[in-house]
Image (cartoon, rainbow, N blue to C red; front, side, top):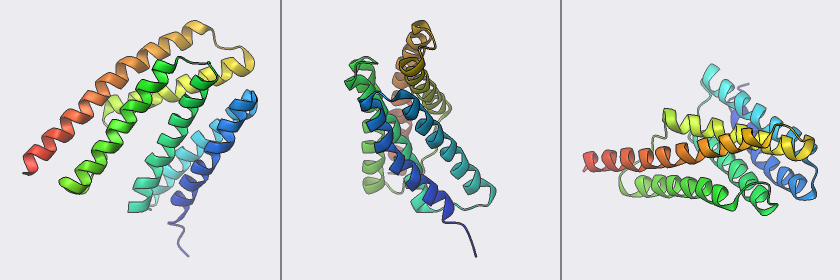
Length: 181
C-alpha cells in the first residue's frame, strides 16, 4: 500500500489548523496559538520531506502546500493586525504581495500555460522572515519575549524583502510570458 497521499493529508491538516490558531489569537490564548503554529510549521516540514524523500509529488500537493502556507500566514497577519499586535500597513503589504503572486499565477496559468511554481531565494528568505516574525510576535504577546526591537527589525526586513520579491515575481513571470509568445 502506497502512502503517497500522506503529504496532501498533512497539507489539509495544516489548512484545518488555521481557524483554531486564529481563534486562539482572538481569545488571547497566545500560548496555545504558538503551540498550534509550531505544529503547523512542523507539519509543513514533514510533508515537504515526505514528498521529496519518497517522490510523492502530485499536482494537488503542489497546489495544497502553498495554499496552506498562504492561508496560515495571511490569516495570522490579519488577526494580529486586527488585535493591534502588529501594524495594519505591514499586514496589508504582506497580503498584497501574496494576492499579486496568486493573481499572477492564475493569469499565467490561463493565458500562457501551466505554472511551474519555484520560489526564488529572496522569496524563501521573505517567507522565513515572516514565519520568524509571527513566531516572535506570538511569543511576545504570550510570554513577553523577545524585546520589541527584535520585532521591529524583523518587520523592517519583511518590508524590504516583500517589495524585492514582489517585483522579482512580476518581472520574472512577465519575462517568461513574453518569451513564450
